[in-house]
Length: 142
Image (cartoon, rainbow, N blue to C red):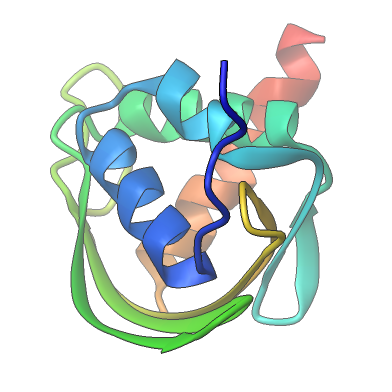
């Protein structure tokens, strides 16, 4: 089998986003480094590809129609700037969730094959609420 061709962070992110919108956790996880680092508004939220997979599974549970629309990508080789909108309708089985309607910016870094770091910047009580609830549920499930 021939070695895979190195790709830009923007190309990897486009594939990640397509898999994310299809709710395909194995495909999203395959595009992430095992030691992935994710920050949201400067605070570390995820410290591995497995953590991202768990967080996304909870997000899909909270927002069954979750999707992220990419508005613009600035491709800088191993880094990319992505302007996006996250949307989702709260699950009817989980009380108190706000609708997800968040616009933000991510700066993602790749190594040519997987994403290694993502820094997301957004202002949204719905996203904050989902992240807090995801962390609480993760602790309960452990």
